[in-house]
Length: 506
Image 1 (cartoon, rainbow, N blue to C red):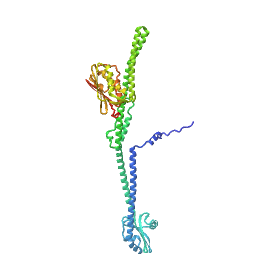
Image 2 (image 1 turned 90 degrees about the vertical axis):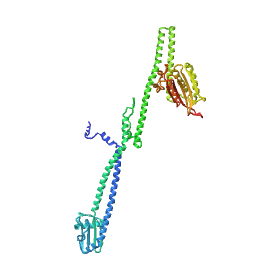
Image 3 (image 1 turned 30 degrees about the vertical axis):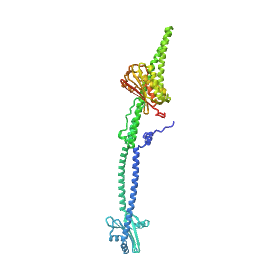
Image 4 (image 1 turned 180 degrees about the horizontal axis):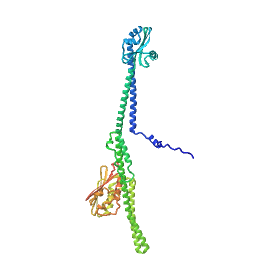
């Protein structure tokens, strides 16, 4: 068997390491790091450039000091060199500033050098240091480094009387540059800390609306939106949805989106409830005729099996008549439902030129024989009212309104049909002086399977689809239908786009 090596228990899981390695930075962190990083780079460049420029200025000043000192003391020192004095003796007679270097050589005296210390004392250089000074001048005539003494800016002058070299220590220049670098570093560090804090605060405050949007979206995403009644109350706070800022516009847009989604969900819930009610009402309407058909069918079969005489034939004929009546009732119901479905889909309309006045006259003519106990009145203008629409369906609208007035008002009621053109609209009104409609039923009067039996004097066996069909047909013609009612004054009003004088629909 092949041995399987044991995993290192101390090592973190690979998935955790990979997840931590892949974890992206937040926008806030990226912005802070980017701003502070770029600013740090710029400030370091400025510090380096400032130090280089200041160092050059200080070096130039030191070089000018050396040249001035050489020009000022060269003639006197050369005479002293010709007299055989050493550098230490010359500096003892002519005191100089601390850090002043003097090296001399003459035909009558060997080379010597001395330097003025910080306490103004004069120290002679050793032969090795003098040789190092001579070698340094050969390599670099301006800057010379001497062990245990320091670095000097030097300048020399050679004459027949001897060689004179004057130098000034560069320690002060280095000190000044170092102080400046320290000051720049401290100021840069402090500025970067303040910049990081200010940037973090500014970015955090600026991204607060975005975080509010993300939190709101996250809370909304956890809501069960797929079923039942849903109410989305989550919104981005008003102070984080200021449309005057870019982030605020995002919050405002999300709030508007949530409003639309909430309205859509409410509409969906209303549609679901309406559909459930519709299915229940349709089932109820179909159950009665189906039960009647089943009952009469069983009665006919029982009569045929028990007594095939004349009485049975009469019973069977009566049962078949009732079966036929209930079948016709179901047929009308199914046809009405199919019509509503097709109107919802934008079908079932055949457009043409329609004389609304003629449609009203024909509908009233059909209603008089069906309601001889009502008074029917036509109120028409001198000119016909022309519209573009489906003549058959518009006739059905007027017929349904008249049937509604006939069915739900007592005998002797006056029903008036008024047709006129008002501006760009063709208006048809059906008015009756019956008992009116209950206020509680007005809002749902045009819903499917809605009945007004409770508010009218007579009962009806209708399906409650007449007014809903009328509304569907009117809305398919881009019109509106409304009702206003009080005892003794009920008016259904239909408004449709009228045709212009050139014959096109408005």
